Amino acid sequence: MAGETTYLELSQDGGGAHKFYEVTVAGTSVTVRYGRIGAPGQTQTSSFPSAEKARAAAAKKVGEKVRKGYAPAVAGQRAARSVTRRQVVSAPSTARAVAPVLWRFDTGSSAFGIHVDEDRCWVGNQAGHVHTLGHDGEVLARYQLPAGVKCLVADDFWIYAGCDDGTVYDLSSKLPFAAYEISSDVDIFWLDIREGVLDVADRNGRLTVIDHEDEHQWSRKSSGDHAWMVRRDERAVYHGHARGVTAYAQDGSGELWHTPTSGSVLFGWQEDHAVYAGTNRRVVQRLSKATGDVEATYPCDTVVYSCATSPGGRYVFAGDSSSSVYCFAADGTRLWKLGTGGGSALSMQYLDEKLYMVTTDGALVCVDASDGAVAAAQAGNVPVPMDVKSAAAVPTYTPSRTLATVTAAPATGIVVECVQEAGRLRVHVVSEGYDPSWNVQFPRHIREAGARYVIDALAPAAGGFYRVRGEIRRLV
Image (cartoon, rainbow, N blue to C red; front, top):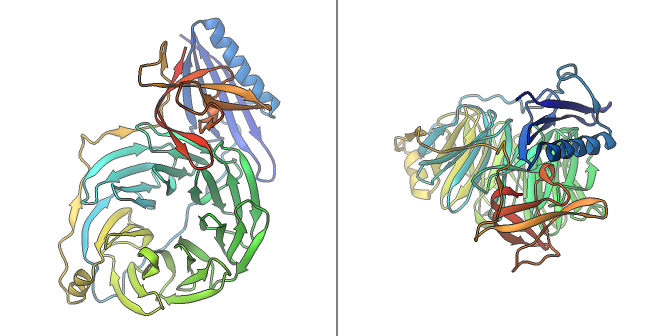
């Protein structure tokens, strides 16, 4: 059956919003497609009891967008705005020895995003692929997202992928969904998240803070552009950019300190009492979180692309533009320098005497960073790295294009309802055993006043709200 389609765009001058919204009615189904102009966007389909109710729901969606400034347009007439991809070069390592690489996994495209926890490793690349692997290199699952992955961040159980299309996807459930939609004028460079509050560093040197409801809280423009670092703790947000590191009060009330670094910040890491900034002037610098004072400097031989630490900052690791990886003692003493055996490390993380890196050649690499393995490597004795292959049977998950419907909630399902509160759509739990006053972190694009949904599981989060775990279905 041919559908009735309404296509709208909102495009503002001066780098503002540049996005589209398309609604198609086909019988009892309503399909919404939205995103940045020039991109495929995301698609969501909902079913209704009758064609009349489907048309009414579509008209309501269109009306809401028109009131926000969207206007009818012709798809394809406006060009897409450019998305910044980090321009990097990678030279061969000058180190005499190669790091003891245990295994290597080729993701197929340049990769920036990495997260390693007690259970598995996550890696995201520029093609929008996110893979999860066991610590032994076994590929467990694959996600296909609509746009390139800039970074991967974790908040307790939840894993988020920030993508080139301005969307941050929650990968914690079987099917990924859009948890945050960053404004179209924000070109994401890096993310951090704590207790549901998302911090976004962008190309223009801005810091944007968004709450768990995917609503803007506050923003600041730092003195430098190209902000490749943002880290948050319970006290502050630490923003690294072309002119150094700036700390802001976590509620946005003001700047706490600013420290010029030796060169532009290209990567950041944090421990309990310090932040670490890797720069294009060949150093990693450790800054006090309390005062911003530079406490130690870790000199490398070329531009620093990434850095990490062992717990407590006992060891400091760095990856440079010449495919080398370094280890320093806390006081700045260089302990070793080894070649990666491949490209330059664009991101890294240390866990249980292993250093995990994603490189310019698109590989996720696991290095044995124990003292014994490094000493053997310096003597020329390194293991033959296992070349990890992704099995054809590995499941692939994509953001759901259709919101499944059910006529009754299963016994284990949790019912939530979307309601209007002070002009905003909020989601509250209807099922017993939950606090009905708490909001549910819920995708904004599928919220409809009065609609009920069934969720597999909910988990309480610090700050007094619930997070979704599992599939979301519409209750009709």
